[in-house]
Image (tube, rainbow, N blue to C red):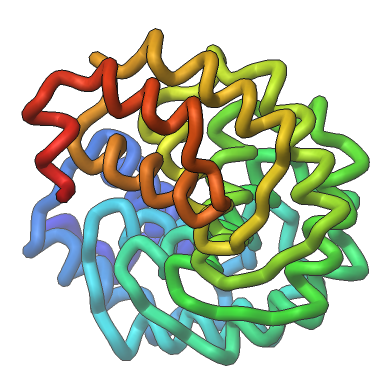
Length: 267
């Protein structure tokens, strides 16, 4: 329909990326583009490859063989990639649960030596995406935690929430990072969405990591925002606080201020 077989690689990649940004999904067009790409894959820059993967991820498009080939090309040329391209590619495959070990292994090998180049948003989404795919690599996670620990002021609330949530899902307990992050969190809880608060509390519960200052801050902060919490948010927070060994008096106060349907909907 668009004669995409004659389009240059950059135009194909930009087209897929633009459709994704607009959330415009036309299955026939995606199939047509998908058929035009393989024969010219070696001509694509790493940015183009990342943008195609990113577009497919946002549009929930899963051409298995093409995705495999894109991931393998990226893994072979990862040293050419910008940090944004790396983060976007891993984020893309996490959206469609496409666990490509060639790409993930190459990322895990490369990132520790370049971790300081990653912006806060890029690093947090990279770690979060690895967690979604249940890809646990000790050196990658350790390097990411060490880098984040020293520049938490660069991380916004969502970045921190995603990072800690990833640690919980992957059961990776890096105490210096968690201590620093929790100290930072205790003074900025109002910046977090209900989902962010729930994710942080739940993840810390999974890790059985208790930070007294954060727990005290939560016990003061949460009752004032309890009407914002969904039943799942509330259940995750109670689980997290309980797993951290926090029972009284804050948890009781939080439960007491919840509307009955919220307090009971998660058991």
